[in-house]
Image (cartoon, rainbow over all chains, first blue to last red; front, side, top):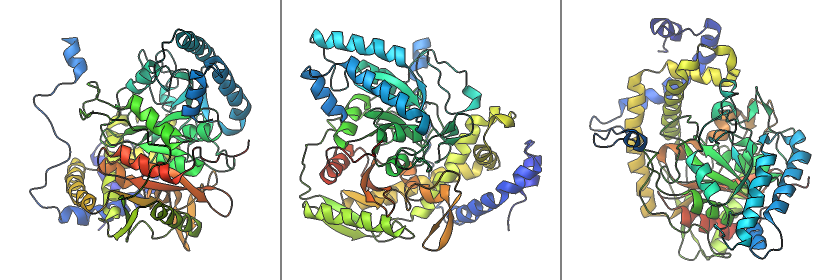
Length: 65
Length: 458
């Protein structure tokens, strides 16, 4: 079932004109159709590729101190 | 003349940096009106820098192969005191107070920056038909796109304005213009080249690399721009090496993967023939061709697109109330990214990790993979659909179909010219390697292309 992108936009407080939403809906639906089955097959132990390192600070922050 | 040939001529005092720079500026003046490859020309600063380079060389203070060589960078690399727009109306008056690391290191190597190249708006597209600064045109056929988003860099190098121009690649933006313009385009491993001071599009997918007319030139540039930079949190501490391959390397013992699925489905027949011929050339030079299945590239493409949309929209969200400052295609992509839930982004990053692991198994069987860079040659400006094997496909999706996944995997890849289609337009071969195998893929590339790639007569 495709998502109602207009409702999602309004609920998120996004000021995207209806005409623009209509133009991108097909593309979003296609992405959704490709992506959702991949997520369903995702094992629970999979960690994201984005990692936070508690002991790492950007060099320019250290310079500023 | 290639970058390394010019460097050798400089060392032999057969030519001066001032002469090379004057020649580059003359060619830009002559060819930029018809190609729009250069967005900003830094003539005066370049002449002054060239004069200094000549003085240093005369004193025996050579800084390496880039010393005194005219170069250009895509207009998203910060250049101190010189406007850096990212191809966007939002930044049309933006003048950075510092250089990007890549620019700083290139200047430190003695390169003479002659200009900043045109690009797709915000690096978010593959045509380089910029609504604010005009369409960049392909030197092989000026009615066609040069590819993008580093289209100006590809066009400037193919047109002989400069021997090297820097590009960035988030979903193919170095390799696509390299393929469409018939030059060499190197996307190094994620973390090999600093992203600091390059306007981001998607933090976890952006890569910086050179476009050149020879493989050895690409290696020489990577020797200068590759290495650890503490200002980029994702910069790798892994030691850089010498990336310039021998003049005529052997491929004996190199195992080249021939994908059995995905990469050779739905190709223009001329592209298919040219790329398959490259396998024969490699085999003739001693390589072993290993047919093998590759992981689900379409799935990796989906994940890469979702990550790109989410990261790009997060980055530009604060500007999105000023809708009239964006081109229609970029605005549509940024709108899409705002509608994706955070859970999708996290799940895409989880999928990415699994796909990385799965792809890594490939490197036990082969040393590198050959694929076409793009399934088609350069489309006409304004063309939105391409017919491939009787099926219509969106030009942007078709153009990025074979390159996008490599960004999500962070792998090094180089696009080299490997022939031409029936209209004489260049065809690109993509060589993909394991993480940090830039030296290997450049060695393989060097074995397959002439010392200087063919360029159009202009």
